[in-house]
Length: 256
Image (spheres, rainbow, N blue to C red):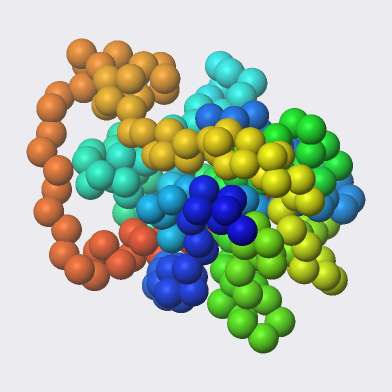
Protein backbone atom coordinates (compact mmCIF):
# COMPACT_ATOMS: atom_id res chain seq x y z
CA UNK A 1 0.00 0.00 0.00
CA UNK A 2 1.66 3.23 -1.20
CA UNK A 3 0.52 5.29 1.77
CA UNK A 4 2.66 3.21 4.11
CA UNK A 5 5.74 5.18 3.09
CA UNK A 6 4.24 8.29 4.71
CA UNK A 7 4.33 6.71 8.16
CA UNK A 8 6.98 5.49 10.52
CA UNK A 9 6.64 2.34 12.61
CA UNK A 10 6.18 1.92 16.36
CA UNK A 11 9.17 -0.35 16.69
CA UNK A 12 8.99 -3.30 19.10
CA UNK A 13 12.53 -2.54 20.23
CA UNK A 14 11.53 1.01 21.11
CA UNK A 15 8.62 -0.30 23.17
CA UNK A 16 10.94 -2.61 25.06
CA UNK A 17 13.30 0.29 25.75
CA UNK A 18 10.39 2.41 27.00
CA UNK A 19 9.31 -0.44 29.23
CA UNK A 20 12.83 -0.62 30.68
CA UNK A 21 12.87 3.14 31.19
CA UNK A 22 9.55 2.95 33.01
CA UNK A 23 10.92 0.25 35.28
CA UNK A 24 13.98 2.38 36.02
CA UNK A 25 11.84 5.31 36.95
CA UNK A 26 9.60 3.17 39.37
CA UNK A 27 0.90 21.60 17.51
CA UNK A 28 -2.48 20.29 16.81
CA UNK A 29 -5.53 20.92 18.94
CA UNK A 30 -5.73 19.02 22.19
CA UNK A 31 -8.21 16.25 22.80
CA UNK A 32 -9.53 16.07 26.35
CA UNK A 33 -10.55 12.67 27.65
CA UNK A 34 -14.21 12.82 28.60
CA UNK A 35 -15.84 10.91 31.43
CA UNK A 36 -16.95 7.57 30.00
CA UNK A 37 -15.62 5.75 26.95
CA UNK A 38 -13.15 7.44 24.60
CA UNK A 39 -12.18 5.65 21.39
CA UNK A 40 -9.03 6.86 19.68
CA UNK A 41 -6.62 5.70 17.03
CA UNK A 42 -3.06 6.54 17.98
CA UNK A 43 -1.33 7.68 14.82
CA UNK A 44 1.96 6.12 13.72
CA UNK A 45 5.14 8.07 14.46
CA UNK A 46 6.54 10.39 11.83
CA UNK A 47 9.21 8.92 9.53
CA UNK A 48 12.52 8.70 11.35
CA UNK A 49 10.92 8.16 14.76
CA UNK A 50 10.39 4.77 16.39
CA UNK A 51 7.66 5.66 18.89
CA UNK A 52 4.44 7.69 18.67
CA UNK A 53 5.03 9.11 22.16
CA UNK A 54 6.85 12.27 23.16
CA UNK A 55 7.72 11.99 26.85
CA UNK A 56 8.58 15.04 28.94
CA UNK A 57 8.69 15.96 32.63
CA UNK A 58 6.66 19.01 33.54
CA UNK A 59 6.14 21.11 36.62
CA UNK A 60 2.59 22.11 37.59
CA UNK A 61 3.03 24.86 40.17
CA UNK A 62 -0.04 26.35 41.78
CA UNK A 63 0.31 29.96 42.85
CA UNK A 64 -2.04 31.68 45.31
CA UNK A 65 -2.38 34.60 42.88
CA UNK A 66 -3.52 32.59 39.84
CA UNK A 67 -6.45 30.24 39.19
CA UNK A 68 -4.46 27.97 36.87
CA UNK A 69 -1.13 26.29 37.57
CA UNK A 70 2.11 27.47 36.02
CA UNK A 71 3.19 24.72 33.62
CA UNK A 72 6.65 24.31 32.13
CA UNK A 73 9.12 21.61 31.11
CA UNK A 74 11.61 20.85 33.86
CA UNK A 75 15.08 22.05 32.77
CA UNK A 76 16.84 19.76 35.24
CA UNK A 77 15.17 16.59 33.97
CA UNK A 78 15.34 17.62 30.31
CA UNK A 79 18.67 19.33 29.70
CA UNK A 80 20.46 19.04 33.07
CA UNK A 81 20.17 22.78 33.74
CA UNK A 82 19.24 24.47 37.05
CA UNK A 83 15.54 24.40 37.91
CA UNK A 84 14.29 26.77 40.63
CA UNK A 85 11.31 24.56 41.46
CA UNK A 86 13.43 21.42 41.81
CA UNK A 87 15.85 23.39 43.99
CA UNK A 88 12.99 24.44 46.26
CA UNK A 89 11.70 20.86 46.41
CA UNK A 90 15.17 19.65 47.41
CA UNK A 91 15.27 22.18 50.27
CA UNK A 92 11.84 21.15 51.52
CA UNK A 93 12.65 17.47 51.29
CA UNK A 94 15.84 17.96 53.29
CA UNK A 95 14.06 19.40 56.36
CA UNK A 96 12.67 16.01 57.38
CA UNK A 97 9.29 17.64 58.11
CA UNK A 98 6.31 15.70 56.73
CA UNK A 99 4.46 18.84 55.65
CA UNK A 100 7.56 20.00 53.79
CA UNK A 101 7.92 16.61 52.14
CA UNK A 102 4.29 16.77 51.01
CA UNK A 103 4.91 20.21 49.53
CA UNK A 104 8.08 18.92 47.85
CA UNK A 105 6.03 16.13 46.26
CA UNK A 106 3.64 18.71 44.80
CA UNK A 107 6.61 20.53 43.27
CA UNK A 108 8.14 17.38 41.77
CA UNK A 109 7.98 17.24 37.95
CA UNK A 110 5.46 14.81 36.53
CA UNK A 111 5.80 12.62 33.49
CA UNK A 112 3.63 13.95 30.67
CA UNK A 113 3.22 12.03 27.44
CA UNK A 114 2.00 13.45 24.13
CA UNK A 115 0.83 11.60 21.03
CA UNK A 116 -1.20 12.30 17.92
CA UNK A 117 -4.62 10.65 17.69
CA UNK A 118 -7.79 10.51 15.67
CA UNK A 119 -10.86 10.86 17.87
CA UNK A 120 -13.24 8.27 16.45
CA UNK A 121 -16.16 10.41 17.64
CA UNK A 122 -14.92 13.35 15.54
CA UNK A 123 -12.60 12.08 12.78
CA UNK A 124 -13.40 15.15 10.69
CA UNK A 125 -11.17 17.16 13.05
CA UNK A 126 -8.13 15.24 11.83
CA UNK A 127 -5.03 14.63 13.97
CA UNK A 128 -5.26 15.95 17.51
CA UNK A 129 -2.84 15.88 20.42
CA UNK A 130 -3.68 13.70 23.40
CA UNK A 131 -1.73 14.20 26.62
CA UNK A 132 -1.70 11.84 29.58
CA UNK A 133 0.40 10.62 32.47
CA UNK A 134 2.18 7.59 33.81
CA UNK A 135 -0.71 5.13 34.10
CA UNK A 136 -2.02 5.38 30.55
CA UNK A 137 1.49 5.47 29.12
CA UNK A 138 2.52 2.27 30.89
CA UNK A 139 -0.61 0.42 29.78
CA UNK A 140 -0.10 1.45 26.15
CA UNK A 141 3.56 0.39 26.20
CA UNK A 142 2.53 -2.96 27.68
CA UNK A 143 -0.01 -3.44 24.88
CA UNK A 144 2.63 -2.76 22.25
CA UNK A 145 5.09 -5.08 23.96
CA UNK A 146 2.60 -7.98 23.99
CA UNK A 147 2.84 -9.48 20.50
CA UNK A 148 0.24 -12.17 21.29
CA UNK A 149 -2.72 -10.05 22.38
CA UNK A 150 -1.45 -6.56 21.58
CA UNK A 151 1.14 -5.55 19.03
CA UNK A 152 1.53 -2.38 16.99
CA UNK A 153 -1.75 -0.52 17.47
CA UNK A 154 -0.44 2.38 15.35
CA UNK A 155 -0.09 0.40 12.11
CA UNK A 156 -2.14 2.25 9.45
CA UNK A 157 -3.53 -0.99 7.97
CA UNK A 158 -3.31 -3.72 10.61
CA UNK A 159 -3.51 -1.63 13.78
CA UNK A 160 -6.44 -1.22 16.12
CA UNK A 161 -8.25 1.44 18.07
CA UNK A 162 -7.61 2.12 21.75
CA UNK A 163 -10.46 2.46 24.25
CA UNK A 164 -9.78 4.65 27.28
CA UNK A 165 -12.48 4.69 29.92
CA UNK A 166 -12.44 7.53 32.38
CA UNK A 167 -14.16 7.53 35.74
CA UNK A 168 -14.29 10.66 37.88
CA UNK A 169 -13.50 14.25 37.03
CA UNK A 170 -11.31 15.52 39.86
CA UNK A 171 -7.68 15.18 40.85
CA UNK A 172 -8.36 12.59 43.55
CA UNK A 173 -11.18 10.51 42.06
CA UNK A 174 -10.15 10.10 38.42
CA UNK A 175 -9.34 6.59 37.19
CA UNK A 176 -8.54 5.25 33.74
CA UNK A 177 -8.86 1.85 32.13
CA UNK A 178 -7.10 1.16 28.82
CA UNK A 179 -7.94 -1.69 26.48
CA UNK A 180 -7.70 -2.54 22.80
CA UNK A 181 -10.59 -2.68 20.37
CA UNK A 182 -11.70 -6.18 19.47
CA UNK A 183 -10.82 -6.06 15.78
CA UNK A 184 -7.91 -4.79 13.75
CA UNK A 185 -8.97 -2.05 11.35
CA UNK A 186 -7.28 0.34 8.90
CA UNK A 187 -6.63 3.84 10.11
CA UNK A 188 -9.10 4.99 7.46
CA UNK A 189 -10.87 3.19 4.59
CA UNK A 190 -10.15 6.28 2.47
CA UNK A 191 -6.57 6.33 1.17
CA UNK A 192 -6.77 10.05 0.43
CA UNK A 193 -7.89 10.81 3.99
CA UNK A 194 -5.08 8.67 5.38
CA UNK A 195 -2.55 10.59 3.30
CA UNK A 196 -4.06 13.89 4.44
CA UNK A 197 -3.72 12.88 8.10
CA UNK A 198 -0.10 11.90 7.51
CA UNK A 199 0.63 15.37 6.16
CA UNK A 200 -1.14 17.00 9.12
CA UNK A 201 0.75 15.07 11.81
CA UNK A 202 1.55 17.55 14.62
CA UNK A 203 5.16 18.17 15.64
CA UNK A 204 5.32 16.67 19.13
CA UNK A 205 8.86 17.96 19.67
CA UNK A 206 7.32 21.36 20.39
CA UNK A 207 6.33 20.09 23.82
CA UNK A 208 9.93 19.48 24.82
CA UNK A 209 10.98 23.13 24.62
CA UNK A 210 12.76 24.27 27.77
CA UNK A 211 12.11 27.87 28.74
CA UNK A 212 14.95 30.16 29.74
CA UNK A 213 15.55 30.48 33.47
CA UNK A 214 14.52 34.14 33.44
CA UNK A 215 11.23 33.22 31.75
CA UNK A 216 10.52 30.53 34.33
CA UNK A 217 11.22 32.91 37.19
CA UNK A 218 8.92 35.53 35.70
CA UNK A 219 6.15 32.92 35.33
CA UNK A 220 6.59 32.13 39.02
CA UNK A 221 6.39 35.80 39.96
CA UNK A 222 10.07 36.00 40.92
CA UNK A 223 12.30 38.90 39.88
CA UNK A 224 15.16 37.31 37.86
CA UNK A 225 17.50 40.14 38.89
CA UNK A 226 17.04 39.23 42.55
CA UNK A 227 18.28 35.68 42.04
CA UNK A 228 22.08 35.20 42.12
CA UNK A 229 23.66 33.06 39.43
CA UNK A 230 24.51 29.54 40.52
CA UNK A 231 26.48 26.78 38.94
CA UNK A 232 24.69 23.41 38.67
CA UNK A 233 25.54 21.23 41.64
CA UNK A 234 27.40 18.03 40.85
CA UNK A 235 25.39 14.90 41.55
CA UNK A 236 26.51 11.33 41.97
CA UNK A 237 24.78 8.29 40.45
CA UNK A 238 22.75 7.53 43.59
CA UNK A 239 21.42 11.08 43.72
CA UNK A 240 20.42 10.99 40.05
CA UNK A 241 18.56 7.71 40.57
CA UNK A 242 16.74 9.14 43.60
CA UNK A 243 15.63 12.18 41.67
CA UNK A 244 14.48 10.06 38.75
CA UNK A 245 12.39 7.93 41.11
CA UNK A 246 10.77 11.05 42.53
CA UNK A 247 9.23 11.85 39.14
CA UNK A 248 7.30 8.59 39.05
CA UNK A 249 4.04 10.09 40.26
CA UNK A 250 1.46 10.01 37.48
CA UNK A 251 -1.30 12.57 37.53
CA UNK A 252 -3.47 12.07 34.47
CA UNK A 253 -6.05 14.64 35.50
CA UNK A 254 -4.14 17.72 34.38
CA UNK A 255 -5.17 20.82 32.40
CA UNK A 256 -5.05 19.04 29.04
